[in-house]
Structure formats: C-alpha cells, structure tokens
Amino acid sequence: MKRWRENYTVSTFLAAVTKPVWRISRTVSTQIQSKVVKNGVTVRLTNGKEMVIGRDAGVALASLLFWKGLDGYEPETSRALRFFFVYSSCFIDVGANCGLYSIIGALWNPTIRVVAFEPLPPIFQCLRTNVALNKVQDRVVCENLALAGQSGTGVFHVPPSEGRDFATTGTLASDSWQVRQRANRVQVTTVRFDEYENQHPMRVDLIKIDVEDFEADVLEGMRATIMRDRPFIVCEILPRNQEHRNERTRRLIEALDYTAYWITDAGYFRVSRFDFERTDFKDFVLSPVSTEQEVLTDLSVLLEAKLRKLGQSRGTTEGSPVFP
Image (cartoon, rainbow, N blue to C red; front, side):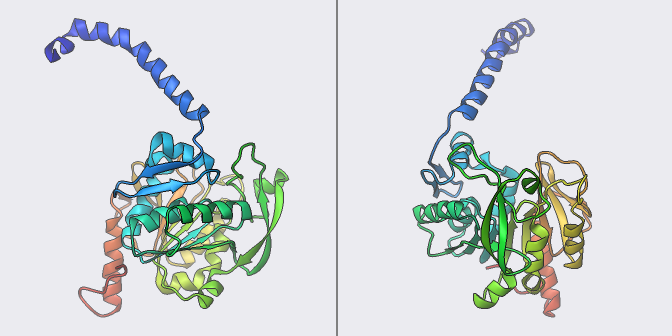
C-alpha cells in the first residue's frame, strides 16, 4: 500500500481529490472552535495533574483550553513560565486575571508559594473560585489589589465586554487607548509591592507581569525587592511604536541591570529596545543575567548563569542554588 501511495500517478490523483476535503475540514474545525464556547473545563497537564477552570470563571480561557489544550493560550510564554516554576519557591503573579498561571505554578511545583494580584473585583472572584476548585488555596494567596508605583487608590479603566467574561484589557495607565475610548472607570486599591513585602516577608524567585502598559509603574514599585532578590521576570510589553515607544520601561529595565529576551516560537532573542514591529509575540523574559549569545533556545542557560553569578558573589566555586 505504501508503494502504491508513493506512485507518482496515484499520489497526484489522491492529493487532488483529498485536498478540497482537507481544506473544508480545516475550515469547519476553525469555525467550530471559534463559534462553540465551552464554559468550564478540566485540562490534564503534562505532569499528569488536572487543572480546572470553573463555570463562569474564565469562559474564553476555558474554551481555548478545551479546544487546543494547555498550549491553546500563550504557548511560548506558558512554556517559559513552566520552566521557571520548577526552580522557584515564590512566584508573584501581577495581573493574575482568573488565575491560569497561578494555578499552573501551584500544580507544577508542589512546594511553590504564589501571590496573585488581581484588582477588578468580579475577575478577582473568578480567581478565588479557580484556586479553590484546584485545591491550591493553601499555597496561592489571592490579593484584590493592583500593584503600582504608589500605594493608595487608582482608577482602573475597563473596556466593555459582550460576553460573560469581563474584559481582560483593563489598565491603570492614564494615557491608554482604554481612556481614549472612554472605558468604564473602577476605583481600585493600589500598593507598592515593596511595601506589601515589608508586611509579608518573602524571597521572590519569579514574577509575571501582565498589566496593559502599566509595567513601568509596577516595576518601580518592586524596585527594592528586584534589586535584592534578582528574580526572573516574564513581562508583557505591548508594541507602542507610535506612542511612548516603551521608553520608560526600557530605561527602568536598564537601571535595574536586567536584560530583555523576546519570547518567540523560534527562541529567545536578546533585545535592547521595544519599539519594533511585532504582532504575535508580546512577552519578554527580563533576566538578571545575560550571555554572549544573541538568541537562546534553552532558558537553562540563563538559570545556570545566575547560579554561577550567585556562587561568585558568595566566594564559592559551586555556589548555593537560587532555587530549591
């Protein structure tokens, strides 16, 4: 049969006949995934554990996970975080939304401690629901707060949503497109992470930031903790080439002595600025160490560099691990 299929005449005929069917099937599959929504889902992780997104606790996310599995949502970013989860004892999830990465972190590493910050009350309730459904509330602390450069209150700008979910593009940024489009205004409580950490001491190994153009303020509010603990940071930095060009974020990363690596499906590209065109990939690994390589295919290179640097700073040849 294999020889028959590889025959030029037979293969040409079969390809001509089946390609239209394949096109129709692919189109139908795409339409089904976009039109049929799954409210609530249980997904098996690659480590054998199951993750639950509850009913009305992240409908769009549950649908993506149902149709495409764990890599249905930000696959490259998810893989980067899952790598770091293994070696982290404390993970700070800034802009946790309904808790995807907080929950994955807790299920991926049974000893990790997670602090998840989500300022919008309805989404915060989804976060708490999902944390409870996954039975990780003993290790995931949910805070209905917005991290910022100043503690107090702030106006959170939330675009309207047509479905059951609340918009995930809310922001505290006062010069944002959300403000220009007159998004709904919600007053939220803000806190500098450095002040929060003074009240809740911890050693931070890993941070994820997804705050829609407000990352510079968040980083400024974490400056003392970042300088002390030198965590890896996975941060969304949106392309704003025609606006502020992310200059404030760039200057702050430089002042912290961090190096940015653009997360893509082809690897991790070292960059020194963010005003370049990008449509599919908006997340970066901000690393306290760097290497001579411009492109990395394996994040373990950065992890090993950090271990070596820590060992040198302590005057040892082997060093003490940064992570458990």
